[in-house]
Image (cartoon, rainbow, N blue to C red):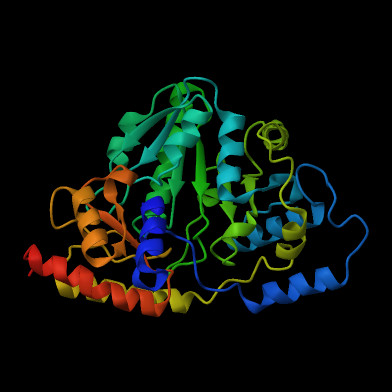
Length: 377
């Protein structure tokens, strides 16, 4: 889809191709980011662009730990945090550390498109568990899926592609199931939580951190979305302070940061985000766009779950073949989206709304034309 989009933009002009396919925010970073960046650039200190310890600057890790402590009420310190090259880097560091060949990682459908590859990169085995009609995990099926080889469940909330936020009751039950299975099998089963959207939540909902429900929890995240700096590749991996073999785990994170070739997270960005842990882009802007696209899709007759966070929406496709529908939308109306099969869930398609208002508004006629063609109303 990305390559086809580039070709279409060259053929028809970028202004005539309405790209709702990529979660690449057009929103600029908050002003605090620019101020901190300018302050550092104008007041450099010796060695500012050199290596630091592989875990990252102690001051930055301490700032991250302090923010996580505020959010969860669990006391974390710099000893629980390793800086990473974005959430993707953090997830791979975590999986490389905990997986032996043949270990199982459970994913809930629909999954983020790269998870399958991440697990297989580290010789793990993916096991898939369905979700219900509202895209909440089917925990009855989850419990039956756990075996002595289960090493982790990789979750993503707020979710890409659905925008669903896993509820407090879901997270509590998830932790209960894992503790029971750990006792049954004499193993540790980790929640690896991919949460770059945890600050982008709507309608007054609160984010239930897995740290509050399971001591074998690993947070893998980035500032790509909450500060709108996706290309800067800055994030972290954090471990519950009461995890078994905690210090060996952190040593593993540091070692895997090296052997996977990251060496360390970007020095300049570590210095910048150190002072921005409590700063977020204006979330009401995304909620306004969420309300616009959701209201329009429902009005056209699409069946869709209202997103609770992130900036994705995942309507049911009006025809069985989601790939054919996405291609029709693309070639007939120049609206780029992603078929649900890419997320392991055929019969749906994903749109993003982290785009300009103009792009969002101009995409509606094409979606409406196909809604009418397939008689959704």
